[in-house]
Length: 172
Image (cartoon, rainbow, N blue to C red; front, top):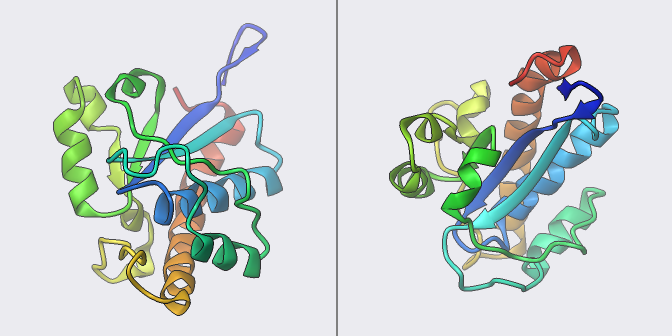
């Protein structure tokens, strides 16, 4: 997307509870796909939490370990809280579960902003009615790995849906 010579990237924010497990995974996986496709100048992605419990902290070590095992680098992530003032600058707000979806839709300042909010799993046709990415925080490393697998599949599906329009500069 461009305005004259200015590139205006398509902007996405992935949102979970505290921004140390699921949403950083989604951000990192999605941005990796964008970079691999050579579209980094056309798409931005970030992540945030509904709550402020972990603001400024690194991702949970189990998140970092799961990401590293699959070749992703989450070392630069620092948790932040979603700010409703971001809505006008975002094209898509991706909730990791239905609780976050409802919270984001409720806090969206306009009906147009409410329409920007989607569930990550809604992009994965193979999810078979699974709408929520489970919160692995109180679980073991294997659960973090399973959650990352879900996020990878859904993020790839989201990317595949957006990629043609991004390549054509048609979004916005």
